[in-house]
Image (cartoon, rainbow, N blue to C red; front, side):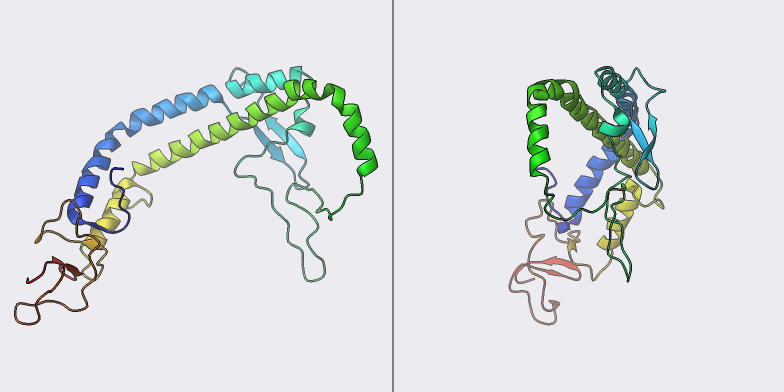
Length: 245
């Protein structure tokens, strides 16, 4: 795989990678435009919940022609009730345990559900409902379950598109904007010129464009023409040295 090294590399290797990513930045505007068009086609379906976890709004009325809007319309046309059946949540609406306090253990989840104990003791009613549902199970799977899974997958896809758009827009930012490509390049440039940061080898004096010696051992002492000579390949504060240098 190209550029498969992690945080240990030579300056020459990184310059090759820099050239590639900077060149790819030219395509970001076109890629963002494509992703926005795709998200507009897919649409969105958002639910708003009150503090008790009950849905107060379903955001789909303004986009019935989108892919998600059509799925939602089909779900309702086949008898589904989104308020009671779907209860879809976005990535920004996680379900978690609400903390208790010094006098009371946690009792509720963030969606309003009570935290149940193990063992429901519902065998008799469960078997009865199962027997009643058996003859319509195929119909439920086709009319409700299949569409519900498609709606949830489409919503996940729409959120992923939005996240990628945000990431790409951030990459175009200035050097001072954390998360931009220029910011990341600046961080590596700083580390490269930091003498005691030896994970990045400055191979200006001893070229190593293929990174053959990028992971050579760290030197336990600094070889010097007037002192001890290097007896192995090793990384020093001044870059790579080879035996007898």
